[in-house]
Length: 212
Image (cartoon, rainbow, N blue to C red):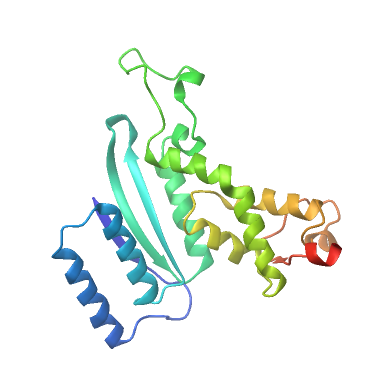
């Protein structure tokens, strides 16, 4: 099942009538062609951003892991950072625990006698494991861009979570580690000296070039 959803919790940033016709035309063209599912998904995500003018366009694939088939595939548009967080939290609640943690259940003795021995995480769990492996490099790359355009932690996290299956807490840990290394400014220390990670509204500013 595929679901296409659009929501905005900020003042309207909706498409004009012309954009509406354009997106409808693009959707009609997609419907009339036989394309791989990944190509259709990429095109719909692009429409959400270029035609419907949402700041964030996210994809959420949730599988029935035991049955090895897709439960639902949702594309979600929002113009608020919090909207991205809501989607990823809903994903987490919809997933089996082992999928979110990306672990093989055999390691924890969770396979029953009626399940096959060859168990591995489904599509979501596999992608999430990969995203976690890449997270430190991605946070560093985006943090570097804040030198010329500082933003809040929420903005940084939403940009990452738009395409990556990770949580704000996991991103905060990476930002805190960069601050510990002196690579970014830690404004949260002025509020509470022992604080290790930023709050949602704290600014993220890259300092590395100034320190070298």
